[in-house]
Length: 173
Image (cartoon, rainbow, N blue to C red; front, side, top):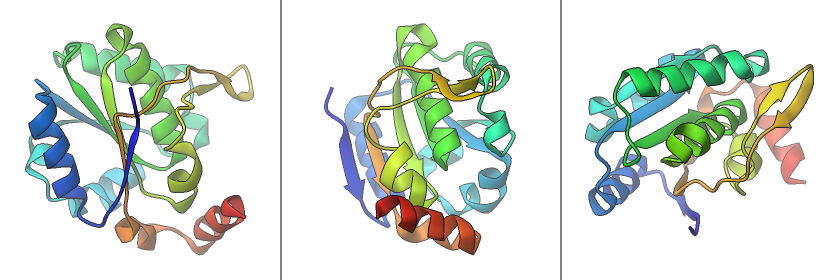
């Protein structure tokens, strides 16, 4: 499947357009605790408002097996099917872990990445690399799986500390 990358500040419209044409039966949103409070309220999509939200801890230390198991459990307990959609809203940790969870749950469900950091937008959310940290090693376990869509918007970059923003610039260079 081809990965579509959409550059827009109309995040809601892009997500609604995808969902209305693809016919997903359920929508789930994965975010970390920071994104839950600072970004999710800014996405006024009816699709997001009706979605089941799955929250994980913030920080790279949460990018491991325990968080992956948590996401799988939540998807299972809340009735996700092979025709469900997982929308990963957050930085690289969320898009990496969420992509891995979607790619492996029920042998693969569709997912969308909405990166909220500059680094995530130029690296982690695109290209199909998903994964988790394992045994003290970064990105040790993962799969290649492309998001159905990556929605890149600058609307959320103002939530970043200056150092995070500069880190994204350094990655681009």
